[in-house]
Image 1 (cartoon, rainbow, N blue to C red):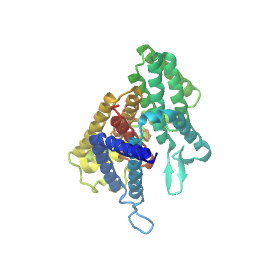
Image 2 (spheres, helix red, strand yellow; image 1 turned 90 degrees about the vertical axis):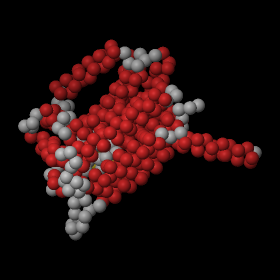
Image 3 (cartoon, rainbow, N blue to C red; image 1 turned 45 degrees about the horizontal axis):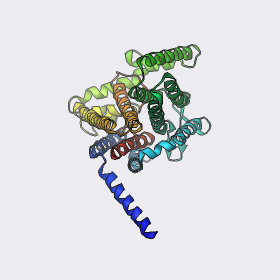
Image 4 (cartoon, rainbow, N blue to C red; image 1 turned 135 degrees about the vertical axis):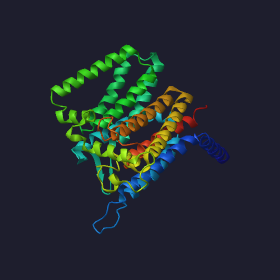
Length: 380
């Protein structure tokens, strides 16, 4: 019996070694490069902040590096445990996401007119970020099951939208419209790849439009919120100050930038929220078009590799997980960069792997770990 157990342990060790060898190294390198670039820019954005004793305040970058470390450890765990076993725990992940979001209305902390964070002493956690993972695995499990049973029917689409809609409604009540947009992008991508019919798409869009009209007419969406959302299209809007300063910073960077740590807009703190929402303005000012293009190329390469893993996945569950991660990263990067350049609405969506923020960093790294998991287990 002892020999049998030892044999099984040895087999498991060899199997884990094989799994590690089947990871996509290019995804790891691209992710690490983006994280390193982001950490450098976050340091530049916050290095001029002084404490009461006129000492440079390193708390932001120190926390960011801790979150990076935690995120990579969590990503390693997410890449090793067979993702096919995760399917059995999807109800638990969905329930945890629900409880995490609902608990904000009792234990949450308000910041910038939104109750979106748990304050835990020296750190704050944003459950809507971690709920993205719950949403991805839930939608992947539901639509892969529905597709394999009787083909994707309209009732299956509505049921999936209802599951995601409960999470989105809790985030909307905070309110956090930017994260709701990310949820929508994730669900839309998964539903499309799962094989939704065009007629179903038209029906769902019609239902959403009716819901938006109802919410606006009943006062659930205020006029100032609409103004903030559409300000990018109005150069004279009063709420465009942040965007205007960001555009000045990016424009002044030119081709090669003013040099790391030498950005005028950055050093004079003329761009609000420059280490989070408007981190791309710091990168654009100090590293210029070359730095911005390099970052976008890294994102493009990472997304292409994730798409490849989706194509190689051995089942629909793994494929849809990859599609959900792909949509999450693509939409957030597109929206954040576009917002900084005045081409997209001001939402507060972080630039994944770049912006300061522990919840976003850990969530994105775990998501990349799930993609690696699908890649590692693509062969039976």
